[in-house]
Image (cartoon, rainbow, N blue to C red; front, side, top):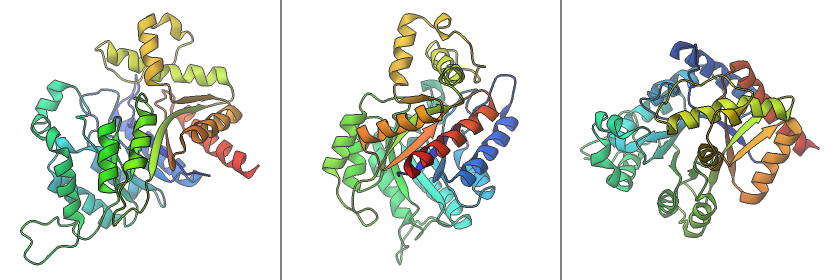
Length: 331
């Protein structure tokens, strides 16, 4: 049974605020910890009213401090927005506070729109330097050498587990060449998934930290008592995608009964393509859907995600999914 993890964006729902989003985030992380999920990752986004995980490292510390076992990490830090030394210091600090529980996923995208990327100051000057910045960051996690002019304090010698994130062949090739684990953003950009996985596995070069390729895929999963209810809950995420593409990003909307009345045909086509890696339904349907996805793509791990409006429904969805996955394998 491959392990399941959770990707969270600290969603901010209509009629609510970031304080409530952070309380919900911690409750979900504690729920995931008790249920046996392996990892709980938060993603860096900026200037998005419905996503509160901009200060990703801060939230990772909050979640790690409020949980016991689960690994907590970034899925990911958008490295071109940051100086590698600062990221090494932040995650060295986290790894010192919570030994053997911190993951660092690194992405090349800005995690926002172009005006905000400019406001972040570094992205447009740094995106092309992503491979070099990753190598510099990894160097700061190595044991400090005599006479080393610049070191991460804390960070040196900690070797924080580092992943490359991506949705294209660029990240796959880079992860393979550096001998790092690879996480693909199949939950919203699945078009290159099969090819990227093939490239990563074919071109992988063993490293000091990883002897064979290790790939994680992301999957939208909504579980409830019925397929109809799961499809209704999922309309919140579908509406959010449409609103973003209409240039009107906002908080997570309440689910609606008729999604067909909400979107235009071309919008429906685009959203269904982006969210093609989705499993919905009752527990049996969800277990069957996850199993089919695993059988087809053979990931080493799965990361589940779902931006639902109703927090209780979200907690229950992840609970039903894990119980169904265990029950399938126990059977």
